[in-house]
Amino acid sequence: MTTQSEIKYNRLMEKAEELFAKLGYKAVSMDEIAEAAGISKMTIYKHFSSKEALFMEVVLSMMQKGTALIEEEMGKIPGTLEKIDFLMSYNMEASKNYSLAFYKDVMSIPYVTEKLLEEKYRISRIMFERIIKEGVEKGEIREVNVSFIVDMLIMMVETFGEKYFNKINTKEEIEGITSAFYDFLKYGLLGGKR
Image (cartoon, rainbow, N blue to C red):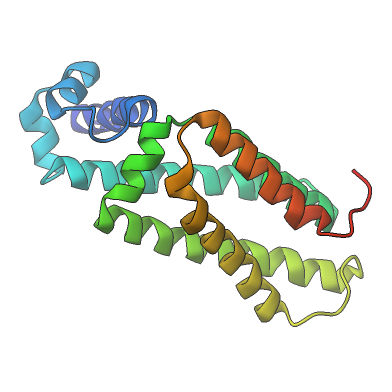
């Protein structure tokens, strides 16, 4: 049976995620989070030493939920290229759920940025490795050095993010640049069927 403390914690995490995703880190106060969750600010500080610690936990929780959903859906997809397509489409659609302020704030807090990128790298490596190995085994992808290809994909994603992130001023720009990047990853320079 769920305890009262667990109910409050879950409500805290839910409301903090909603507020951070919509308004970003800087625009949300601990008082606003407490009010939205229907708890006292003291209850928040029982679980988290600071707003930054809460934000970090919320962002990691969001990543874990997204990863679980991706894993579940990819288990239903038989083809390698379809899995890659799903992964790219999912990330593009998911990016629409968060405000520009959220993205800017994530990238402006060094500790959060470092931890987030570390976790994203870990998850990406596991997923890309699994997809590419499976594709080679099924004969859907030519024989390749899996580790090298995974490193290249991750470097492309990281470099792309670092190069373009500070130039983005609107959500539409995020969506447009992300779409163009994924189009390049999927079809390359030589094209192919869409």
